[in-house]
Length: 153
Ligand code: CTP
Ligand code: ZN
Image (cartoon, rainbow, N blue to C red; front, side, top):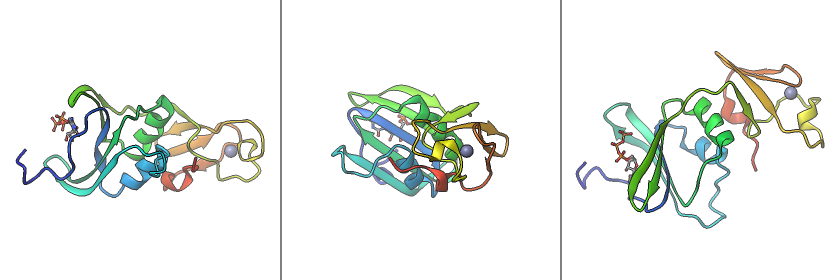
């Protein structure tokens, strides 16, 4: 890659979420609960040119490791993304996302009578369907715009 094309600088230690579908970077940040207030360095590229995807988004976070729950919800919103763990400037691990069977936490149930939306210590849990997710407590199905159901941490 030439200097011309390098839009977002390399990081030393942290996570690079690459090949995010164009337009989804801010949803990725929401899933990760990143709003800039924790002081970690975050770089976001939107609609950057990609050989494979035409355009893509990319998110780089210094010093952040993703939990399995975060990776699971990410895989629903950004199924083509790859997760690169960077150590001392080198790509130490590269993971493709795999669609999970269920996602715990992160998404909130749209049913206001659902036990998970009451003041109970019950984490949300959704079964992943071919075309959406189903609340395992009240059977409510979310089919479109999962990103709108990310609970802000
Ligand atoms: N990266 C980074 N900081 C580093 C090393 C890599 O920000 N110190 C970024 C690269 O810019 C790239 C991603 O991490 O966006 C993956 O790096 P690499 O595997 O070297 O790039 P590619 O081979 O292009 O990745 P892929 O095969 O997944 O397209
Ligand atoms: Zn529910």
